[in-house]
Length: 528
Image 1 (cartoon, one colour):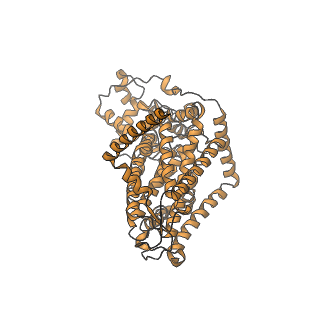
Image 2 (cartoon, rainbow, N blue to C red; image 1 turned 90 degrees about the vertical axis):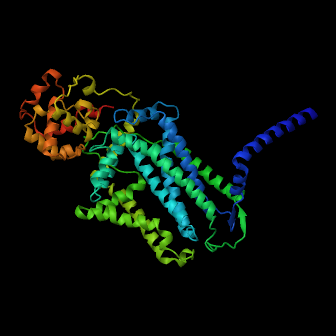
Image 3 (cartoon, one colour; image 1 turned 180 degrees about the vertical axis):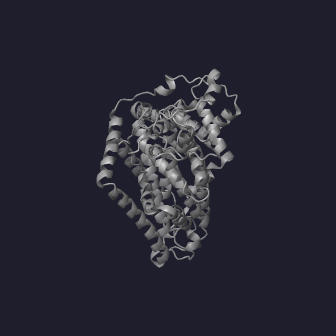
C-alpha cells in the first residue's frame, strides 16, 4: 500500500514538473487565472452567455467544415457529385453536413441575440467603442460566410440564389460590373466562381474572423464586463463575482443546449441536396437562406433607377449606423427606456426585417409560385432518395473528339484569350467541347450568318438569358477575333486555315443558338 502511494506521489511530482516547465515558457497559469478570475460587476447572469456560444459555434463550424473539405472538390463538374457522395455514401456524412448547415443558422440566431443583448444593456458604452466595432465587423463576416458557402453544393437552389446575389452586386453604380465579374471570376457562374467562393469560405473569411475574434477578446478583456444596465460603464461600483465557477457553468449549459439542439435537428431532419445546377432551367425559382429572405423581399420594391436606393443607399445607412452606434448613442445612460431614439430605430429595423421575412413566406404561398416551389421540393426529395451515382464525364467531352488546333494565327490566338478571359470555358469547356453545364460550341459558326451570331452574342435572347448567358461586351476587333477562334473549334490543324475563310449559312433559329450556348434542354445539362 505504501509503495503504491509513493509511486503515485512520484508520478504527480513528474507531472507537476512538466506543468511548471510549460508554464515558465508560456505563462499559461497566469493567463488561465486572469481569465477565470475576471471580476463580473453584479455577478454572473444568463444574459452573458451569447458571446461564449458564438465562439463555440464558430469552432464547431471549423471542425465540421474541415471534415467536409476532405471529400469536396470545387469544380463545376464534380462539386455536386462530391456533396452527394458525402450525403449518401460517407458514414455519418449526412449528419455531418446537416450539423454544418444548421450550425450556420444557429450562428446567425445567436449573433442576433448577442447584438440585441449588448444593445439593450448598453454594453458598448464607456470606452468600448472598438469592442463594438470589432463585433459589427464580425457580424458582416459571418454573413459573408453564409453567402460564400451557399454555392458550394452546386445544386439548383445554390446556383440560382448565387446568380441573384451576384446580379444584385452588379447594380452598384460605376463598379457593379467589376464586382460581379470579380465574384464570378468572369461573365458566367462556373468553376472559377466555385473556386473563388471555396477559397473565400474555407480560407480567406475564416482567417479574417480568427484575427477579429482575437482582437474582440483582447478588447473585451481590456475593457472588462460592463455589468447590468444600472452599473456605471466607466467606473463600476457594484460588487463583483469571478467568472469561475458560476458564469462558466452558465456558458457550458448554454453550449450543451446548442449541441443537443443541433444534433437532434441534424439527425431528425437532415439537410437535403437538390439536383445538379442546370443554368438552362428557366422555371426554377431561387430562394436564399432564411436570414437573407428579408433582403430578398426588400429588393422586390425597387425597380429601374431607384434600385440603387434599395440595394445600396438604405442598407448602407443601416449598416453604417450599426457600425457607428457608440458614436450615435454617446450618453453614458444605459437603461433602454432612457434611450428612446436608439431603441425606436433598432425596433423599426428589427420589426421591418421580421415583416419582410414573413411577407416573403406568404408571397410564396400564392398559386403558381407555390406549385413551382412544391415541384422543386419534390425534386429534392426524389434526388435524395435516389441511389448515389458517381461522376461520369459528359458525353460531349468524352465521345466527341475535338482535335486541338495549333494556333498560329494571331487573330485566333487573341480570340482564344477572349474566350478564356470572359469565362466562356467555365460553362462550355476548354476548346468549346462542352460540359455538364452547357453543350459543345463546335460548328456554331456554320449554323448562323456572322451578323446574326454577333447580334445574339451582344444581346442574348430571353431563352439564352434564362440559361445565364451574359451580354458579350466586346469591341468590333475583339468580336472578330472571338468569331475567328470559334470557327477553329473541332477543326484539325490542317483545315484550320480553310475554316477561317468559310462563310456560315443560316440554318438554325435563335432558339437553337440558345441551346448551343447555354445548355437549354441538352442531355448533357441534365446528367446527374
